[in-house]
Amino acid sequence: MTVLPSQKLTISQVFLSLAAGLMLFLLPNDAKNQIVEEGPGEAYIFLISLVISSVLFIITKRYEAVGLSLFTMALLNAISFFFEIVIGFSEDSPDYWPDLNKYRVLGCFLLWFVPFMFCIVIRVLATGSRDNNDTRRDFAGFMSSGIKSLLILYVVIIVFKLIMPSRPGQENRELVLMIFERIGGCINGSIENGFSYICWHCIVLAPLSFYLAVLVPKFKIWHVAIISAILGLAIEVMQYILATASACTDDILMLMVGALLGILIKHGINKLRSVITKGEDNNMLSFEYSHLDIKPKGEAQVLTED
Image (cartoon, rainbow, N blue to C red; front, side):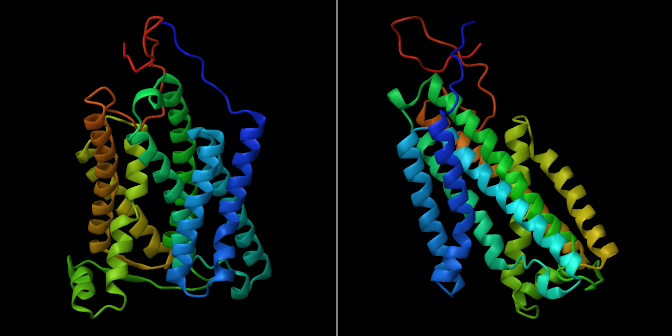
């Protein structure tokens, strides 16, 4: 089998990607300086991150360049957050403790989501000359970088937001075993910010299940149910032991919903791509491209599989 060699990014494309990643990393602070209100600030982040990723793609014409910018942004966020924690412990003062508030969490998510979905949409709609072995290998490289960047941001958010205390010395230990008690309180309004509480817990495992579904294409829904239940239980136990949040049975149920959502998104995107290509490309969201072969000389270079 003859396989087209993978094309590496040129030096100029690498520098452009690194610069774009740095711009994405700095974007939330810039938005905060430009706009005080959170809603318009998040809209600003959405718009500018879309502009940065689209301009980078138009200049380089490479999915992988966008993936490298995502990885750079995620790595800079993780390093920055690590140093904030170190300073917080060394100063031993809440004033120096990193504040992972809703704006910052949504900002990190948008910085990854907008460029990632931009490339996903472009790839889903790719046909003709824009759909060949080179572009599919390029997209596989983007998927690898994009998913790694998602995992970096996800670990930072999960560890600090769900496991570590919001402030040094802060304790919040509570055990709620009655099923649907917390969900019912959120719905009837007896729990403050109940809608946000449900939304947060119903999406928090979605990135992880999406990551696992891409990494393991044979990932089934029952795998999601088992893994998400174990992870949800582990998170709630850690919260109770460390006294960082209330441990609740309903939280585990909502976490399982989020895990199901992640795998459904992955299968939905692949199904849409399969419909557009009439079944030729039914696993677009994949790290692998070793199965791609070259058509005989003179024919269009499209996907063939062993």
